[in-house]
Length: 397
Ligand code: ATP
Ligand code: MG
Image 1 (cartoon, rainbow, N blue to C red):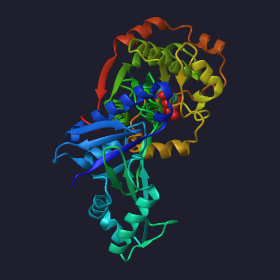
Image 2: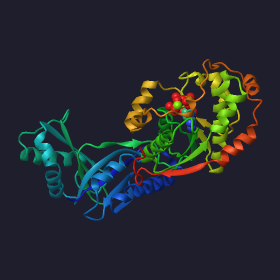
Image 3: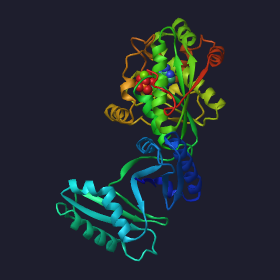
């Protein structure tokens, strides 16, 4: 049966002069995302992306599921196109949605006519189609106020489209219209959600992970790559920079006062992330920090952590409750992997009594014995880049 998907644009429609750029990017992202499922024609008209299978054997269910993760749309409809006349519309509703009507106790028809040359008004279309359907489905009564099922009829430029209730789109802005950022990705619950949230605002996201072999295992690294793969379901693909962090952590352990270990370590992470960001054309850093969650996330600690970073640091979770973060992680599909028990380098050499109200002066003094530039240089030389794609790569765990 011939089907077509309509994706209604979200905030994209509000963007005035940039609208064209936003639309092109969205269309490109959609095209790339459905490619795997067959040959589709993807075009944009009237603030809607049309995704039309060209061949019979396209995997429509696969494509439909993939479209639900493309940022930049508010709603998605799986429709049946038909000619723009009442008989054809009625026939299309009957064959496409008849079964749904048989199962519902009540229904209504809602019509929209963006092709104003169509001779009937929206209300007339709804009345006419609703009347015929009521006759054909005597057990399903018309209820225009709170129907159990709603049939939608849209008269657009190219054709008429009939569909049932729409599904929510992924929201946000098309990936790629908001610049590029480097996300500090740990194996925890928070940072994958942070990456997702900035991708949702249109950013292309790259990641950096600090890895302290043999204090942390190969499994911890695979876990982070798997998290990146899961997030890439929404943003297309993700490159992860794996940075060897062992030497830096040992140097901190050997030469710095214990209560500052975590803070100094976080400062190194931020500085190295910034350098990698610059090399790859990223304009901001992203972290999963959340005010008050752990000792290194007090306002004083956060001021110290970012001291050497000039790029903007985005912390999209900073004001959220843990509960909200966990709910979101579950919804986007990263939670299960995040809670696997492999240790992150943050839990190596954790101080018993970390400083929660450090001053810059104290921290600078605490790290004074380290040859920071040389340590950073060597860490940067160790970088391994891995690119993951949800569509193409197998699960890594
Ligand atoms: P998460 O759940 O993201 O691990 P967290 O609550 O455990 O966060 P911290 O361990 O203090 O918090 O880390 C704060 C932020 O620092 C993380 O959200 C992440 O952005 C970054 N970070 C921590 N450890 C690493 C790491 N090993 N590699 C890359 N980034 C890291
Ligand atoms: Mg963590």
